[in-house]
Amino acid sequence: MPNIHSQARRATLGDIDQILSIHRKAFSGFYLDEMGPAFLRVYYECALANKGVISLVAVEESGDVEGFVVGFKSPKLFYTEFRSSKSRLLFPIIFAILRRPSLLIPSLANIFRVNKDLINETDDTHTELVSIGVISKGRGIGSQLLRKFVEFAWQSDANEIRLTTNRDDNDSVNQFYLKHGFQNIGVEYRNKRALNIYSLKRSDLVGKEI
Ligand SMILES: CC(C)(COP(=O)(O)OP(=O)(O)OC[C@H]1O[C@@H](n2cnc3c(N)ncnc32)[C@H](O)[C@@H]1OP(=O)(O)O)[C@@H](O)C(=O)NCCC(=O)NCCS
Image (cartoon, rainbow, N blue to C red; front, side):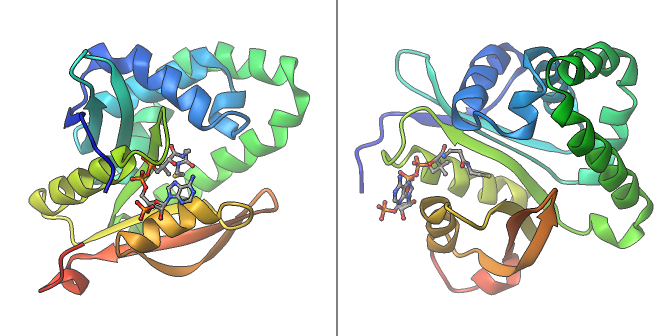
């Protein structure tokens, strides 16, 4: 087990600049990063202000944030609130699409997917982990954050945690979740990208230590 000097604690709005900076490095080239810093800032400000958010940062003794994890007890509540920030999102979306017209199709697909999820009543039964990232990989910081996230989710009465990650060319991340007891329960396709869906159920963990 690597030597970890960081402590995981709840994230606050004061951590947002460091979270954005880690997100941009850890998810470089992914949709949210491509939408630009202004869009990403609205996304994380909404996320951290959400009533059902579980957001943690790993902080070094120096005070530097080394990693973060964010998820929602009720993904539906988050997307409803995020959608209602349209006035703050409009210009970042327009600029992102003008800068890179290829973002139009994924943006429309995401709006369609969010609207569909909001209508689907059965879809809010699990806590969703939406992003986890660290500055330097392989030091155990991701594991520390994930364990704490799971602990907080069970404390908030969640019964299941779900997340998605790229299925292809992403072995280390898939191994990371399997190592922490998540089970692959299927595949979903977004804009031709295959994503593995992982689930961790509280009932599966009775008597086990991950
Ligand atoms: C996924 C991520 C958060 C893991 O955090 P981390 O601090 O690097 O992970 P840990 O050091 O706790 O590693 C735990 C296990 O994950 C696996 N793993 C993590 N990184 C790995 C790598 N680069 N190569 C191989 N295995 C790796 C290993 O199984 C490791 O087990 P070990 O300790 O027995 O070797 C981190 O790699 C990251 O920020 N990746 C970029 C962003 C991302 O893809 N996030 C997930 C998508 S939702």
